[in-house]
Length: 94
Image 1 (cartoon, rainbow, N blue to C red):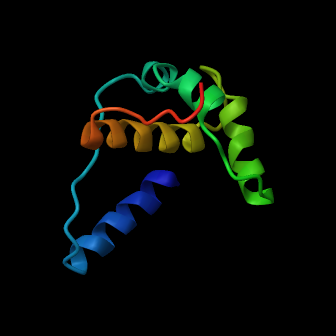
Image 2 (tube, helix red, strand yellow):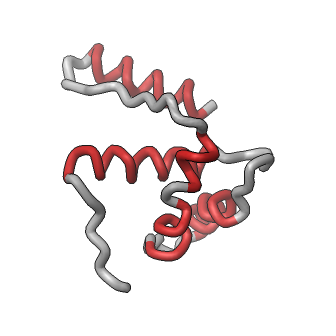
């Protein structure tokens, strides 16, 4: 489902002549997520709302054979894209 929504968004941007670049990783999804798992679960601050609690539930229950991993995969891809563009993450609190 997440991929279909992302593809629709991408196609809508292209159709509206909004410049976009695709994002694709050849790495194993589990390894890709685990590379940033500590940052995502220990250093990322998420606004406390009902919707965000539901979103975060998937993040904190992630494991190799979990049923749903779209939320953490999406968030991890956003972190990887940010690092690609800006060179590193800005850590505010240690």
